[in-house]
Image 1 (cartoon, rainbow, N blue to C red):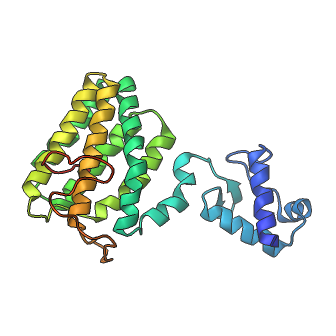
Image 2 (tube, one colour; image 1 turned 30 degrees about the horizontal axis):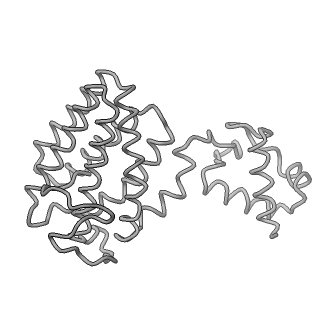
Length: 256
């Protein structure tokens, strides 16, 4: 094992065992080098690698500290990879995102209060009125982030946000059925709001699943180019093609 890997594994073990707690400053270099049996160069490389993963953070003039170790920080490296995925990779993530957001919606229906429902309604009202594509993308993401945060599970909400982010680079609003897609997206949001307002976890989960399944159908059908210029790696589906692993969904567009 390389000395840098040995140092990184040693630091990770200290954090896992609670010998280094969240927010705690790392001991001085000589002490850590002696404890881990590595050189200063290897230790510094290990610290940089763990900082890149969100486990450690450097504070100018103060030193290096263990991060707060919250889910959002731990997903930083994964988020960087997801944010450059081509369309075929993004579509694979729908098999993860569907059950994840269905669970988030169910938890939100069980736990959310009237303030959350009011916020969802307000965001959706703005979204339905908007004619600006960039604004619609931003409001759509706000809607889904609000819903997932209402689950009360920080890890679930953080992971769902990471999986959702790349999708905003692939627009289906330039498709021939753009008006139908937009209407279906808005109706999908309304179904989610109504289920949460009714405190019906099963209905909320079903609405989220249908919502995301339809999004995948349209992404596969039109295989849009991402706004960062990369080429899609999937062939467009014919209009009558069923979604992968299921029966054809009713006509009407997706919602993100």
